[in-house]
Image 1 (cartoon, rainbow, N blue to C red):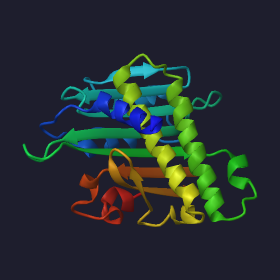
Image 2: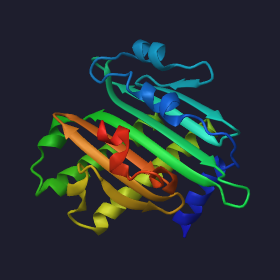
Image 3: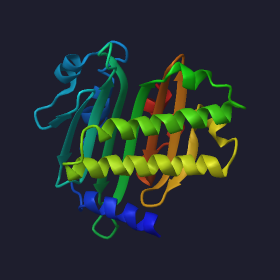
Length: 241
């Protein structure tokens, strides 16, 4: 019950009746691709992805640009974490949240997208796991914990950004619980269809994770609106991971 009430409280902080949609892919996720792991530095990131209507928050190791529109009805954030020694990007995240009404008579619908790309430590990758499922689950859990730690370095002064981060964290925790309830399911994370799960407030979701060398790429989409026209595996951004 406490978890349900907490989730409702976070969504309450985000939820205001919507009007015109913003172009989530173009305004948020296209810029996610402009930061290159192991290459980009903080100045490169700021010059490439900063928009005039966004707010900048940063710590010694993380730079985040976030914005809102329609009285918190559209929220988004791009964040990049840098290695303390090389000063190059080692983790990057993009997330967008949108709520809107389909008609006057239908309750507002919500959708969330989260993309992440992280350089994983060799020790994590080379651990002698029992099987692929255990390995995938461990890497996904590490990635979500890295997101939490990176965003925590920015402080909690802005309520809107904090609510968005908490919604992503809730979703990640829910995915891990789904994997724990079904041993072996994490082995399917690399499949085009990913793994299905349900978010208590946002509804159905899918998660996919690919691992190439030491880089993990993660994509999460939550909310029925994503899947009304095409299944997850037919989305161009899923196919081009």
